[in-house]
Length: 428
Image 1 (cartoon, rainbow, N blue to C red):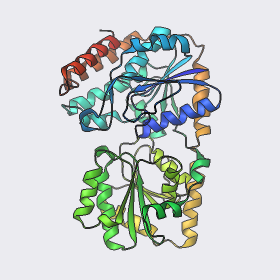
Image 2 (image 1 turned 90 degrees about the vertical axis):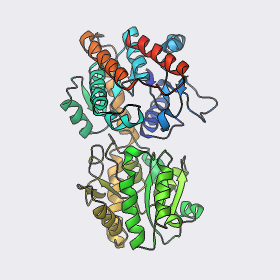
Image 3 (image 1 turned 120 degrees about the vertical axis):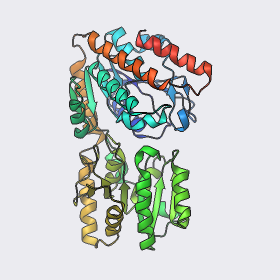
């Protein structure tokens, strides 16, 4: 089948959504399906990309590492006529998601939407962040989901939250898959050698986008307590983002810089080797829909210490493949991390084997099977125009535009282009 994937974030952007889209696209193509990806322009993109259409975008929106796409759908018409999509899969309820909705209505195609993100947790990137804005964002995502023929939730926690928010479209739990075989490989000892980490060090690791909403101040304070109490402990931080310099400055202020090792963004095979170099993976985010990095760590046999949250509790089983802490207390988190340095060989092996077994549930093959089965079921069904839901979604979009006056701090020409295309996409 011909699958149209539309996303606001894609490679080389580092983040859960970009990696999720790439994982599914790669698996679909392996199985012989054609996939066209529509995504924003990003810095350092590959020079040649097969079946990828890049849309104009404003880079590093409001100090973040995101791009804000300008969804000019007219650019896609000739490409879509050649591609002849069977289904449209949107990964966001706004910006390029608006274009996805318009394309699905125009060509009378089934529309699938993956609710990757708790969007209200990200409004601090937008000028005029407020409780009202967060409420409008929830409304927007809910109305958008109700315009879709199928909604994918990355975890059961998020599926239940969507039901509570009155999403009436069918909801299926489809986690982002992990290439189990790939993450089973890698050299932890080799990675430690490259980074200058002693072989006998106790390595607390974290990998991901380093951003304010990831609760990294909490994690930093817990790791600092461990490093001060256990001289053989060190911290391996993999990733980039706007919070990185703040985190490093905090460790420097405590005189611990020499025991913090940073690796930036990693590609395979270095990525899986980084997981193997860790003795325990530390995760404090409360804003995930699915902790993809948790499944990756477990596929490398690395146990996890995490705070209980949606998208996390489906992966981490307390005292089986790691520790799931139900109270966000820095001291408790620190002591729990430190306890992993004291495990004997048999207990350590038990955690590693449990982590490997848990990762199998989140394999790429298993997730792609579920997604493709949903696609097949939708293709050929009679197209339904949801006029009432469409009006509700347009109203929510208008309320958000009025609340934050999007892009008001950017050049008038860019803001004008954005507003014009948003109005076109909204049917105003």
